[in-house]
Length: 495
Image (tube, rainbow, N blue to C red; front, side, top):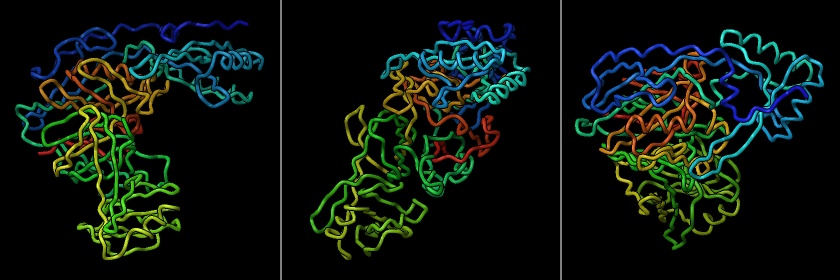
């Protein structure tokens, strides 16, 4: 066969187009902030980045950082039988042979991809099939090859080489909010918008909270009914009230007044009846599964499921107002316990109208091994992946459900949150998916960026098209969808 195996994707990417020397970084347009690093940018050309600075409130500074220049182009990636762009060596060799045997006068190359090791997952080896390399301005030539392959019954796609996680020269386009704990007099808050169930944009939530600035929050559930897709994947606490249960052991940021702390959390949910019965609850403000008990708060914003189950409507003092068939609104000043299948029988047997029912949610900080007091100034947002712990890179992708090649190695827009040694808050967005304009960051690069910015603890939040930073209710970055995406929750700096 004419194809060859290239060991390491970084080698392949370096061949994409002729290297273009990076232009010298422009001088910062304002005097450096005391909290901003004065050293070289940690990625790409080893020089100081171009930077602009704006003070947006007492103790709150906004930085816009640009660095590097694109030297990446395009390739064509042949898709594996499962539709992915990588697979085993055997799958890749078979796909390369299929291309050669199609008589299309194309030269497929099998390339080795290594998803790097992270704190809770070892390195893994995969293989991809690439055809050709074209400069940034010649994407149309790659697209024609994709069309040619499609006509032959072979699935493929055009790939920008800057996205693949191998060595690149950028460009990077970042926005960074830095909060000086010695000067800032406001507080940090989370928001889910007007309701839990409905997604809203970060800027809309910013207006609701009258925020100075903020970023999008954690992941939301796209694998549920459309009307419920605002449901955060993992924990959400707003004003001391649990609105979504944790995914046990996953990363989160606990906000309390002017403090922010990154940890891993779990939740324990329990209801107790005046009849003396107690039982566990499986969820809060989400779609109910078979034989589950789920609590719905007045913030839910949708009717509960009419699934043949049973519900108890309870006022905020714990008095059971009525027992009803499942499928109704959650009246203001109440919460609803929904039982499906065998859990409906628990409600029928143990909850009585006029009696009491108490819901006791407990949030456990797994690093400190103690309960988090849910005071009115407590807000908690579920993170994506832990990046930095005690000043060192510590990417816990597996426990957070994001240990794939796509999530760890490939570059995407990223939303990042960090805490400095002095307790300062860092909120950052890295734009991406814009060939030649903004390359994004891999998880490892995200950790490097946060360490460079001074974070001793850091996590990623939801990224991709969700990545958004708002200042005075205006989006300041460039979302990759071309417009701001409605999301599940957000993190804000408030007066």
